[in-house]
Length: 241
Image (cartoon, rainbow, N blue to C red; front, top):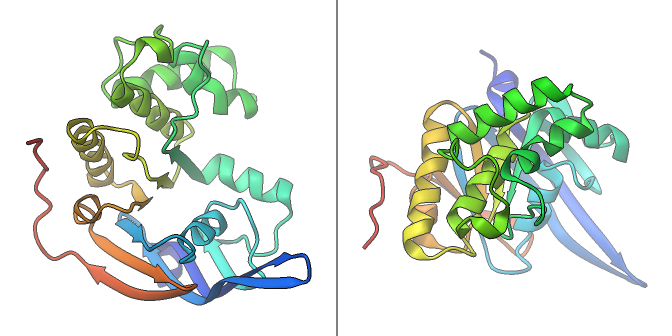
């Protein structure tokens, strides 16, 4: 397998500058980084470090000012907004800190939503959504609205929604930020299980103990990639205190 096909994310001299009035604010300054298929990578850094900008570019939510970024082998650096949306829909699953579930909609319907946008038939939507919810351990909660689910269960629904399109890459932004310690352990164990099954996972976290459960930790500071560490120890499953 070549390096290109093995890399789910390949950033080359990536830079992003935002304009605020007459002022230019550089957010990323020439970052080069590869994430290989099957890796679980934690992205760390203080506010303003560039990590969120990097994730936005990887997630095809924005375009770089200069440099190149390939996602699953496709150069998305200069794609239009519509073309980037198509890449997101077929390649990337997103999990957010705030769950972002529709409050009056069942778990099943929340998970089906990305497939509605893709114009998948109703029967196929249901089949795939049920399978995704069963995969995250919520096969018995299909009809529950978010109000009837715990925080951990809501995040599992959000993970199922990210998985239902069969993505090559799962991006998670502070996925345990709204959860207590014990529930965070459960959700993190699910990410590890998905990664062990071959899914590439990239997650942003401020928590060193969360990052330590990844296979690799990269850190940003002042728009630069300042460290890239592979975790050598065995990733044993964390246990709640």
